[in-house]
Length: 72
Image 1 (cartoon, one colour):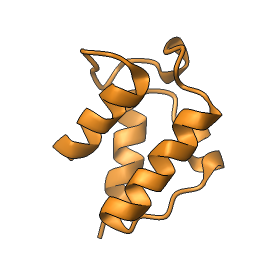
Image 2 (cartoon, rainbow, N blue to C red):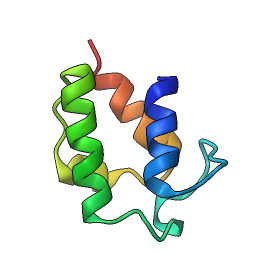
Image 3 (tube, one colour):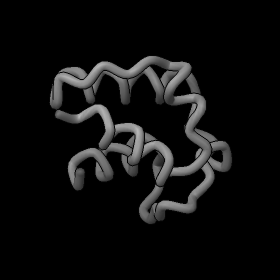
Image 4 (cartoon, rainbow, N blue to C red):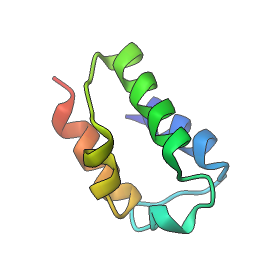
């Protein structure tokens, strides 16, 4: 999960994230960021996520929980 967290930091252009950070507060949390994250997760972890699932996540913690639930 650390690699995913680091990737999310890079995508959101943020040096510090915590589980309560609101995704909508990040200027870089947009459709391009979501597609990039989906592609990364598919290539690195063979995890299939959909944009509607990611858009439903409100916080970094929600997002990480969603990803963790998909990793087998």
